[in-house]
Amino acid sequence: MTAARLLPLLALLALVSTSSSVSAGTVTGELTAVSDDIVRGYSRSEGDPTAQAGLRFRDPSGFFAGLWVSRVSHAFDRRFDDARDLELLAEVGLVHELGQDWAVSATFSYHEYPGTSHPTDASYAEIGVALHHRDLVSLRAAYSDDYLNTGGEALFLEATGAYPLPGGVDLSVGVGRAVTDLPSSDYTYAHAALSRPLGPLDLELGYYWADADHWGPWGEVVRGRWALALTWRFPSTVP
Image (cartoon, rainbow, N blue to C red; front, side):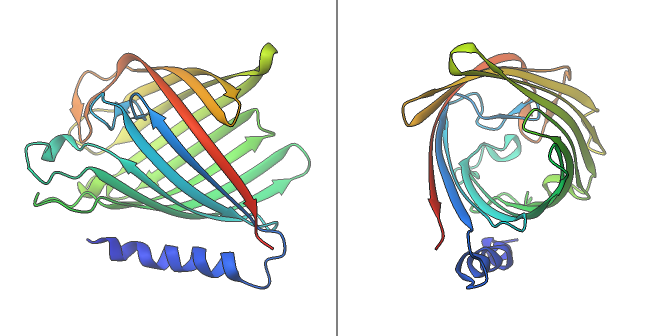
């Protein structure tokens, strides 16, 4: 697989962003520096600092599309001189409101890892659905029939919550369960984080944990680790 597989999603994003039928679409973006990129219980940066950037478009109908770039490190090709160190993530989805307090969303995403001589291509697609209660609680399920192109299925079930604290501080917590066909066993992962705006930046300090005692495609699971993230977000409105 090559980055060309991202073109249909990128074309759709560009089409919607420039369509005359979109009257009040919003484009947002972010640049993030993080001490450790921890996702679903694994460090994707081998415990090292890394950087991420992303853009997302959303219109009043609930349609959204986005593109993210992250520096990552795959466990199974770190020994190669040209090991994969980038993830390109494109997604499209739809949010549908259920009254004032509830909403459901559906997402299709494609993950591309370009540039390596390793014989295994890790690119894969994922679909997800979620139920949201305001900005306070979300229940999510994500599924891939060929996770990281390993030939195995993977299902991720997650519950997350957020609560505002005094002083402009927000508390977020989450717990998830990974159920996979990979040689590594199923496992549970969780996190708790505090975040606060600092002028144009957002600062977040999180603690991450997983109960698995094995290695996976990203390396060793995180069994208790702190991570610090600094994010700059930039909004704009499409005329």
